Amino acid sequence: MSAQTMQTPIPPTETQPAVRCHGVTKTYGQGNAAVQALRGVDLDVGMGELLMLVGPSGCGKTTLISVLAGLLQRDGGDCSVLEHDYGQMSPPETTRFRGRNIGFVFQTFQLIPALTAAENVATPLLINGVKWRAALERAGAVLRNLGFDDRMIQALPADLSGGQQQRVAVARAMVHDPRMIVCDEPTSALDSESGRMVMSLMRQFALGKDRVLVVVTHDARIFEFADRIARMEDGRITGIEDAPRRESDPQRDP
Image (cartoon, rainbow, N blue to C red; front, top):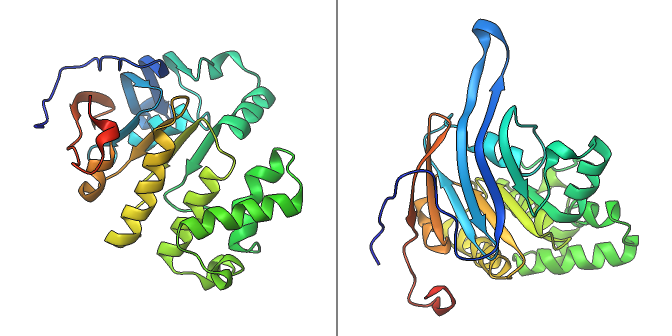
């Protein structure tokens, strides 16, 4: 199936929308030092969809997913995520909503140095009230699905390679079974095999009818795991295309 580029605004998918953004803006700084990172973003993402955001560095991709995750406040426009508007929530309400519903994979991992891999992954569960032993058991299970052995599960971040740390960050985003995961370059430090392992698990996650996954990436090797690819430039969505299809993935066929 060949990709076909379409004009903005991006049309909604046929499924229930998980994300609805219209005219979203975000500016850093003030006066002559102001940088407009988002210049009126229009984007709908459907439930059960894996959407990838691509574009040159500095075009606003990370800012956009940070707004979707509730880590940054937009300056203007409308945006609802899972039928909630961060602009209508207090900071404590946003924190609670994010803790229950959002998983975030940071490009810089942001692991806690003093905690083991399992303890880092268990953190979202502990925040949501899961008991320590149960949280560690769940964290270990997710890490094993990402190729970790018992030694690696108990290792500190400093004793893991960059690729292993990235897999810990991915596991932490998935462990509490959030309704939406947003990822910033989740395969940038991974070899081809590990990258496919991570994306296969994320693909399974996205197939859930009440879940959604938005991935920022420069890695063309993983485009085939997406449903759609949205292209950004200069703070705007400039087009959308269907992702290349895999013959081995019949669940994605119409």
